[in-house]
Image (cartoon, rainbow, N blue to C red; front, side):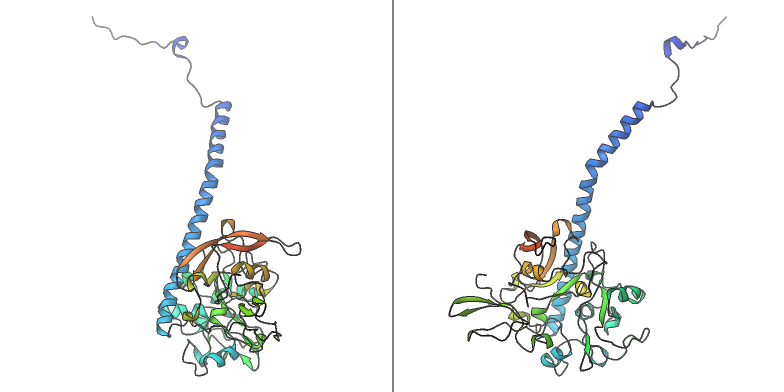
Length: 362
């Protein structure tokens, strides 16, 4: 008769069933995971930062496309950036540049948005009227976010001002009427438009001599005198004592007048690193050579120490759109401190000029 075999379990041969990992094994696993994270996180952080830098550069190139369209319709000019006195001097007929209701000069972001096909007809279609960063931030629900290329993904502040058009006085009021019908605001001293903006404009190219310059030329320029080539500053550097003294006039948007445009920045990353800035000047996105000790971006950074970010991108890198409409990333190549302040870039590589004039070896 067939019998079913019986399988017997012998603990001594097979061992007892295990209930899980021991404490030592868990600690080993946790240590390995922590080690992998410590190795991977810096690489992931660098990759994320690089992606933001590249996207920012793509935005600069998007600005170039809109600027090219705008210039092709405006005899090769970029949008004007100046006060009412400058507008009257450069375009008394209000026909060369872009304007909104009541012939209010469009800020350059609004003008380029219009050229890019966005339905901007007035400055309030892009931003809001405000006198301070805090005031603008409190009105953020009225700020439009449909012109993506104006914002760098690494910008933590985002809100800034192109500065012009601007209300300066009763006789120099660049803001017309009460602005946005949905949020009417009467102009007061120091008021301008604020919006989502991570870039600044070169006023040497797009500006006009205004009240501060006393109608004198306002760009840094090298001139030949009896003592050889000498640097000349712009605003607040008068009167000239040398008969050969000559400074550069701002170009009123005429891109064809820029000397060596592949080396002169037109649009720069600008704005404060944090929203705890001490003065509104840190949010005035204008890049100028007036009062700087040289024609280069590092010279500007040394004098106007708060208008450009230093920590937006890794190693202080910045993206620049040049006057020939190519975009590139520049990095600090030298630093200098003034009066115990934090050292700031005194030279970038490659070198970028702000002044549109020939530096003659400076």
